Amino acid sequence: MDTLSQPQRSRLMSRVRSKNTKPELMLRNALWKRGHRYRLGKMLPGKPDVSFGRGRVAIFVDGCFWHGCPEHGSIPKTNTTFWISKIARNMERDRHVNFLLENMGWHVIRVWEHEIEHSLTSVVTLIETTLTHRREIHT
Image (cartoon, rainbow, N blue to C red; front, side):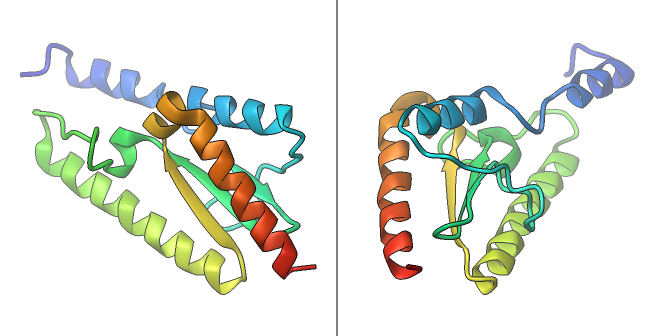
């Protein structure tokens, strides 16, 4: 049973950040330090957390809870039906955004927040490799 009342839980959940999260900032900092200049994809479908116009690479940092991470995603024990439906809709929206971007010629990279927290170097290397490959194609 939830220890918070419904209004308390609602207020708490409304304060969860949807942008500029700690993992996003960690990734952006690491990319900036490596000399990569990026944009925040505000004008693209799904509003990627990081985008590189040259090479057309869009990067999303997906939260384990909100996007249904197979390793760390969990469903709350209260209001279970709502949360299962909510996370399923988020995952479907992610697939749709990927489809839209790919049809526009963009390459989409999705990384889990735990990947950034535990292996940031590997994530940056993946992005750098993708950028190098994509820039060769689009030059």
